[in-house]
Image (cartoon, rainbow, N blue to C red; front, side, top):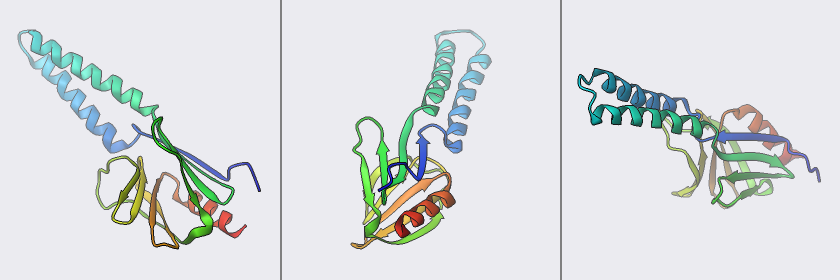
Length: 160
């Protein structure tokens, strides 16, 4: 048994470009509303506070780890935030691997261990995913920023 991981990828909650752009547009709207307001009333200062708050939360979210994908010892380990349970997928039970686009939608919500219609989803950001099918027909969809490396490491672990 090898103890060193073959593949490690960290997915951060706030680094999805579509979500960053939405937060920045909201902050810019707040700042524009603050500067357009003629009389600097309480409402104007509220726009300034909300705009700065959006920027601060956005920066904090960029460093907030959503989940970590590790491939080692013929298994995939997905470890999430503080309150989530670690998910371990045994590669001996996997019968099919395919690399696909995660979703046809432009903006997707980050999810961890979401069971929906016989599919388990893991996603934080990016366009691509690896779909794994096990012997029981359960489908695992793991969103990734580097699909080729993840697929190659999974196939390498299944062979060796």
